[in-house]
View 1 (cartoon, rainbow, N blue to C red):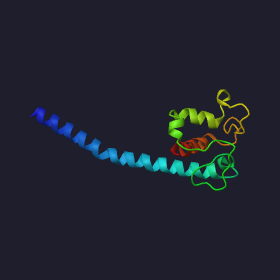
View 2: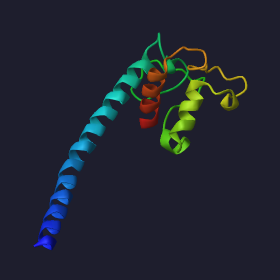
View 3: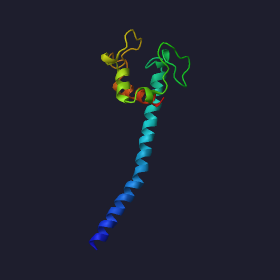
View 4: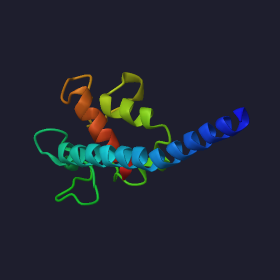
Length: 124
């Protein structure tokens, strides 16, 4: 009897986990999609991120060509934190004579805005 109860509880736990996993995944996907969309708005905004002033980005109009095209970002930055550090403006990651402003260090964008831009750029 005791073994049957243990097996029943284990089966219930497994079923609950399996049923809950897709919902958690969908919620994470929806949150991620929202972050990406908000990051795109900031990146394309001429008064905020203004990434298009220097970079070609799929879906953007009138891109600049001072900076590299923002494509294949997961390949270029396998560690998303390094991309964030670059956008934030960590001094040790600055490229000499780069036109890119340090968005976090100079408080051009908030930490939340930088996180959203990073999610968008990382999705490219």
